[in-house]
Image (cartoon, rainbow, N blue to C red; front, side, top):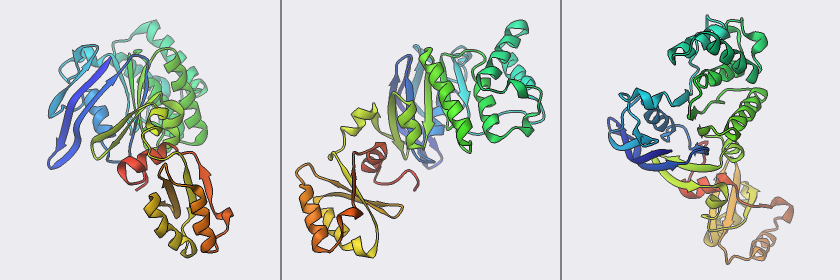
Amino acid sequence: MLQLHSVTKRYGDLVALNDVSLELARGEFFGLLGPNGAGKSTTMSLIAGLRAADSGTLTLDGQPLTAANSASRLSLGLVPQHIALYPELNAVENLRIFGELYGLRGPDLRARIDAALEAVQLADRRKDPVKNFSGGMQRRLNLVAALLHRPKLLLCDEPTVGVDPQSRNAIFEYLEQLNREGLTIIYSTHYMEEATRLCSRIGIIDHGKLHALGTLDELLLTLPFEEEVRFHATPATGLLASQLGAYGELTTVDGTHRFRPRADFKFSKLYALAESLELPARLFASQRPTLEAVFLHLTGRSLRE
């Protein structure tokens, strides 16, 4: 359905996207995972035709995705990272403006507005100015504004930033429903749990490079370890941490050491080292690796850095 081939985008000396290639099938819920400044929003803006690539091609159903090709852009819906609503207008007035921009009129537009407000639980606030909405309510309204024209492909650029847990869950459930009904979705995020819950396939992006692409299970298979041991970083555990680096990967994130042993490492070795340093076994927690471990392994840093 969607193809990006060797796409590069620069802003002066900054390479925001570096030779990115990607293919999406119809009906996918694709996650683009990376920290702020990784290239997620640039990717979204190029697909949406808001900016032009310096090199490479983007196509949707075989048609070029460019600012000049308005027909292809009508097949897209964009939920931007920043709220794109008119705060002085009410919910219905906002949706009417967006609907009319897509050529909708009359009873059809009114029916779509009613259905949209019901879907995101805002029907009882339809006449309230958007400036009086909470951040989560504005996000939900922004989402349905991008769907009034029933696009083939929905682009969600970090749509839950600053959203309360209740609204976040409502957005998740609505997007999952839309995807089950056949809508193709690209969802950019720097939240591991969002990508894990929502996305059938995930691309890990950092510094403008697409480092890995696959299902969660496929990404986990790229790791050279099957378990991860975590323990608090303290002066008492510092000596152990310095010794474990010889037996696998050791990183420290938010005051916690994360040890990912090589396949041939015996965990009895870890506990023997700990015992020699008089460190009790209760300090250590073993778990299967997560998407965060994949990101750390590929990029060498946490999403929060």
